[in-house]
Length: 197
Image 1 (cartoon, rainbow, N blue to C red):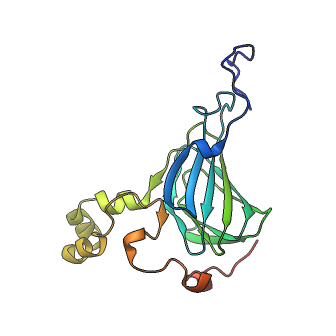
Image 2: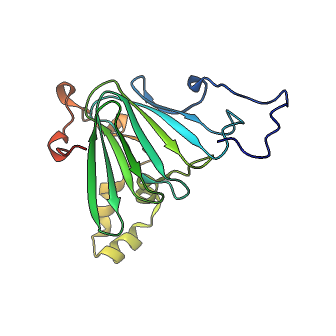
């Protein structure tokens, strides 16, 4: 949907864009994200998208978009989209095959994990720039003493457990993790995600 103030006679009007020109995150050659927003395509209006490529066992880390709902469309491969319903306090997981979609309401914690190599996901948002609030940022930046006090945990153990989270994860597990993302092409957590749509 185009914005109403767009001058469609202007020589600066953009109607096409190559997503490969706007890589927003790269873990490695098989796990990366391209983005499209109004900065890349000025006729886009109140929408944006992420073009996500994942190999088996890699996960777009738990996060929220406080300003947008997300429609997740699976182009190829296989993935599980999971969300935490803040009203029922339950996690819902949807195993997607190519051509299937899942909707994540605005502000809900969610994550996507590839269950096959060469997984390609298109995430469409109803905002010109979807805000990305990563759980890894909270875990690495929250004061350890506050976490320990609030949840009655041992501060030293929290510090030790969270020490490897040195930056926003975006696509996990981190390369320096030392564990294969998917032994023999199958994700470790396959058994957890047995549901389908």
